[in-house]
Image (cartoon, rainbow, N blue to C red; front, side, top):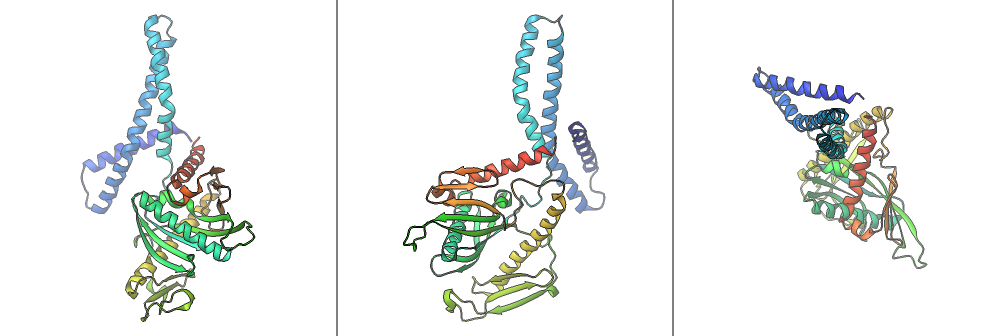
Amino acid sequence: MNLSATFDRVLGRYEDLGRTLAAGPAGDSRQYGQLSKEYSDMGPVVLAIEALKKVQKELEDLDAIIADKGADKEMREMAEAEQRELKAKLPALERQVHLMLLPKDEADAKNAILEVRAGTGGDEAALFAAELFRMYQRYASIRGWKFEVLNVNDTGLGGIKEASASIAGRNVFARLKFESGVHRVQRVPATEAGGRIHTSAATVAVLPEAEEVDIQINEADLRIDVYRSSGPGGQSVNTTDSAVRITHNPSGIVVTIQDEKSQHKNRAKAMKVLRARLYEAERSKKDAERAAARKSQVGTGDRSERIRTYNFPQGRVTDHRIGMTLHKIDKVLEGEALDELVDALITHDEAERLATLQ
């Protein structure tokens, strides 16, 4: 990638937008608003590029002074000291600009739908799924995000077969998107008399919450069934047909919500989840098309991909995608140390994408 040409293209586009906006709306206020947003979004990038170009120009001027044998000795020594100082700043400036120039994931700023399901391992897998769900709930609380439970299908023994939640806040999807995949647990179940270590699993899916403008759903494509909610073991928990099951016929996606006593509320929640799954399916299709050009080492977000192991006897959590191990399993499950894994995954992903700019 020719970064100098990229810089010129960005600066040129910014100047063009500035002139267009200065002329005022030309009838299409919606387009004017989009151009205004683009101009605003480009502002920080332009400032970073200009700061980098300024340092590069200063280094060129200093090189000329240092190379000038006829220059005053004290002047050359001052130039060398300033050169060392600027060269120390240069890598951070370059990295900042490069990161800003990376293609943006449009979904990063969106809220998210979290889905956790028990995998292989019976009751132990269900208990682990419940712990993961609580981990994300605590993590959301720590970060000041709103965590709204959409649906919980529990086992009656403290575990869950599946659960979903809506998480709202700043850059929720950007920080949680690498959590999608298979989470494995290794520990001695409380019911295991022989003290043998069992391996169980749960799957996590983090989907960007889609707005109606992102995904258009044709009502004619939906089959909506209502029925009576039930608790563990089939025990009736509701005397009205308030549970909702929505089937999207073209994709085969089925969403069931029964947490609310109101059929309308359950339907609204189910539509929110359906919209998120359809949006993610569309994103995955586009990602697959781009995968030929570059496959992220962080992972594809595929729910069948084993991403992390929680080993209780050794008190460790290992993320297999980046080879990172934390010996603080309790703090991770409390949500307190989850940021260490999230930050490392984001940094690794940035490094992988930066490599494509070289």
